[in-house]
Length: 109
Image 1 (tube, rainbow, N blue to C red):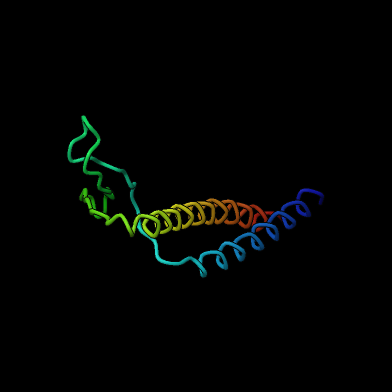
Image 2 (image 1 turned 90 degrees about the vertical axis):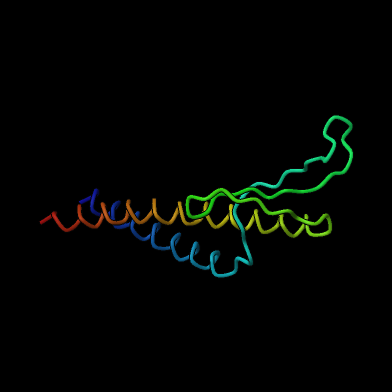
């Protein structure tokens, strides 16, 4: 009986967290994957800096050049994407646990 109570309690915790994740996902703003690096036209003397965003999408490696005045926004979008990935990974993990617990409860007489 204790195990069933604990399982039901955990299911409620999971459901509550999944709802919070959905709320957090709903307010995310524009996002993009990748990593932003500063490169130089003359790396030896570090002259001519420019910013490059590299990412892989649909199994293709891509590079976008980011104007200096857009670097802050690009970093924000990359952060939003990382947050998106983190939340969706957590949601999937919780969903797997939720499913296992529900199957376990269904087998109990």
